[in-house]
Amino acid sequence: MPREGQEDDKGVRIGEGPPLRIAKLPPPPRASHILGPGIVLAAMGIGMGEMIMWPRMTVMWGNGVLWLALLGFTIQYFVQMEMSRWVTATGESFFQAAARMGFRKLFSWIFFLSAPVIYFWPGWIGTAGQILSYATGEPFGKASWQVFAVLGVVAILIILTASPIIYNVIEKVMAAAILISSILVILVTLAVSTPGQILGVLKGFISFGYWHPEMSTKAFMPFVVGAIAYAGPSGMQQAWYTLWCRDRGMGMGAYVGRITGLFGREESIPEAGYTFDPKDPGERGKWRGWRRYCTFDALILFWAMSIFLTFFYVLLAQGAVALDPSLVELERTGKSLAIISGMGEVFTKYIGPWAAKLFYIVAFLQVWNSGFGVYDGYARGQADILYYNLPAARKIHLSKWYYIFLYGTLLPACAAFFIAEKPLVLVTMATWLAAFAMAFYCPILAYVTRRLLPEELRPSWVHTLWLLIGAAFYWGLILISLSMGAHP
Image (cartoon, rainbow, N blue to C red):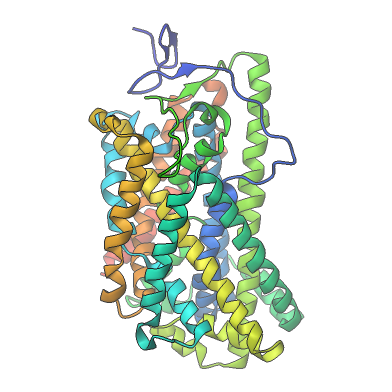
């Protein structure tokens, strides 16, 4: 039997599971093809963490907390780099990588079972519904946010059902949401911010070690853990990133069929991924090109974009507090989106009521956009794990499984809108639980990229060290929270 990483007549064996077939590594994209799955991750983070959670933290505890956001973004940058390394080298998802570790695919199944616990709570869509109720004057009374949230779910289902190639519409929707919200917020923020406020926010990103005493209380620790987890993509979003990369045709993912719309033409899905000969000089040259592309995707489209927009949303929140200092105490109650309504007042004062309504609509689209990406990723991840880990599941095409999980989760999840008093409760629950997934996948990713990939494709120790720092960081936050009995 050939050793791990050695080629036989069936392909290259790495870890447990079927061998990877040999093929040529596709050439990396031209510089003009700048959009990549990193924009999806950035848009999902902006719709909750950067727009709501981090502005709320700075309003309550000062700009000094922003160093935690910088640390979270940086850890997630290295996670994204290694997720992209695996999928471009093998055409397989992170969940397939976890299954290749052996132990009867235990780690992959843990992700499968934990995902519904985390993502049953549709806080993103509920929050979007509450923002839209601000813009429309609550036409359905106190139930307005719930009505709009249900309509948001319907919109997600219609768009994802009608799209021929699901990833294509995901990337376009995410990019458009970032562009529209960024232009609007940046222009207004620059007009109302003082040099002192700008300098104070910048200093906050390097106030290493700052920790407000109230952050360690039982009442606020779950929110703090969730906000830090949402410095960038939270929970399993990084794992789903490998699925978006695959459908984007990145590296060896180009040889794997994509998820198509319910009425689209199904593409061929192999039982395992593909790899290339890393000893071939030409293939190594293309591999370096792909790493440059992945670095741009992670560094510019995700890391820099996320920090840039966090900076502006925090400034906008400070402008809101300057107009209405009572927002600080309202935020401490955690029962409303006071900071978003306060941002709307900034637009009203400096431009006019119409601008506030426009801001609420844009904010609604941005937060709804996060839910859009979350439930697409959730359905992809569950379908991927089931399809590749359970041979009997392959009797049904991967795309069909995608829709089973999409509809089978979103429709029942609508009940949560009528259980929770306010959507922020659902957000805190989901983000706090998401930290568990992040703590779990960091060491797994470190193992598979260093032990299962050929030596020529492995990461540097710097990248692996950052993954281990991430694991220690997230587990530390979780254990502190649990030791206090602090949970949503």
